[in-house]
Length: 100
Image 1: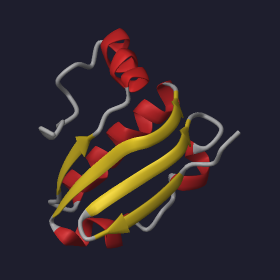
Image 2: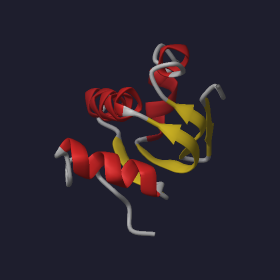
Image 3: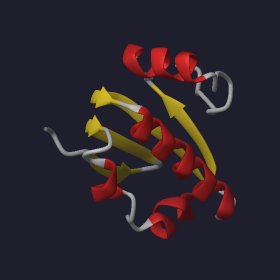
Image 4: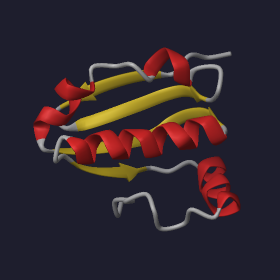
């Protein structure tokens, strides 16, 4: 199991490793207020090695928290596995996906 790692650098929040039920609990209580102080954040998902429904739910939670702080959040570099999970879950179009 590879823990999820989250790093914010110049308005880009990079998530790497596993985004799964085993790792989400380690990152769910991060310092969101600091992340969302930028006003706009792009979440780069290109380094996600594994994702499940808990990981997808965490992305929606992240979106909810960003809206709470009036921060515009977009997602980019969506891995194919996550794209399939989004489609299977019936939530197409609900995550703001940045054009690459």
